[in-house]
Image (cartoon, rainbow, N blue to C red; front, side):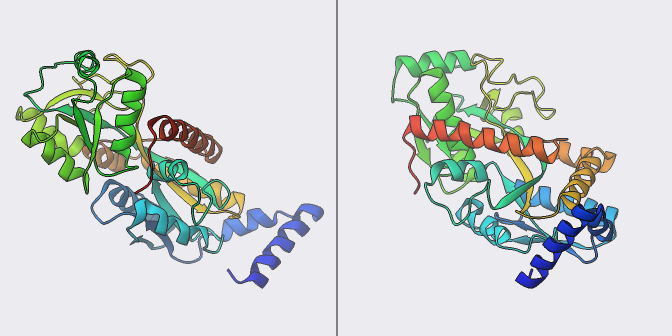
Length: 327
């Protein structure tokens, strides 16, 4: 947004407050007057992209305006998030972020933006979990078995991740921290590679995608020990959470949410949040989310902001205690 226009809107909002005129409400009533754009910091086909496209279609249906999804993959979402942080604060450009937004904030001392200062919470869209997998040759059947084996052989077992700072890496280090184990981290180029390494026995364990791992679990090619979130998955209802299975309080859920540039008028933020929450409860999206192993959320913008701050604090502690360093 040009500086003069932004200044004018600020003056109008201030005048409305002084005169009792609902300037912000009028602005929200006219919104949206043009197409919206959701920028995704990951490649097409991944969970963030799929979530953005599901949300975008539902938003488009609700507001009667096109909603384009733009992929700007790279640096765990940092490139896309920085672009959105620098966009006009008019509600027409949004970022679909993942839990990597909190992880990167914890892992890097300096970023091209401050996620809490330069971006505004709109809606926590969905949560997802990974599943702790082991190769069938590993003599364990439960999380407690794995903890006991790892403690008896410190540094001998390994787990794979999609890279340093990835959700799987953090899940593994949180596991080590809470279980007091030393399972060695092995970084791969992506989620598919680290699951393949577990299938072949190259590494003993990993934290895999629920959707991608279900077929391998059912075929007996890997053994599932626990779900990383706080609730069991509808895709694998017989598998307990890691918290249930031996590490009370463990939670390393992946999540996906919408952020806007800081300064977007509050009524527009509220309007977007209401539309996303309502859409997530529709039969169409509920079925689509379930197929992807995603759980819709109903946080307010304030609750999402508190959640995001809590995630950054949690990951900051994990990064510090695990000695994690950016690549």
